[in-house]
Structures are given as structure tokens and as C-alpha cells.
Length: 94
Image (cartoon, rainbow, N blue to C red; front, side, top):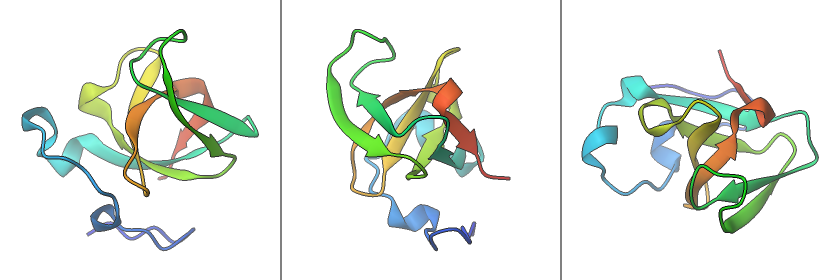
């Protein structure tokens, strides 16, 4: 199991609905907000999509690369919010 040393989250800490496309953790990574103070989590992978929540700098998210697009990561927050964030503002943990 992946253990994150930054905040101590594991993949089990994230509340995720079961999706057929996302059942394999090989497509899932842990990332964090970088290069901005606040980042919008959007309903769809578009800059004009509804904002579901705003997350702060260095907030961790779980990334589903399989459901991500060229410009947006599909993300899940530790609070259970599911949405999309621009890739240029998320760094993936090694």
C-alpha cells in the first residue's frame, strides 16, 4: 500500500465511489497543488465548468490518470470531492 510521508494519507483515506474504469490502483497516483495559492476543482474537465470546491496550495489529491484528459486530472480530495483540476497546477508525488 502506498504511504504518503507528507501528510500521512494512504489511498484508503480517500472516499471514492466505485467506477468500472477506476478499479485498478495502477491508474491512481497521489498529487498536490503547486504553482498557485488556490485551485478550482471543477465538475467537468473544462475551464468554464462549474466549480465544486476550491483547494489550497499543497493540498493532496488522489489522481485517476485513466479518467484524466490532456489538460485536466480527474481528482478526489480527502473530503470526498470528485472533480477535475488543471494539470499545470498539480505535481505528482514520486
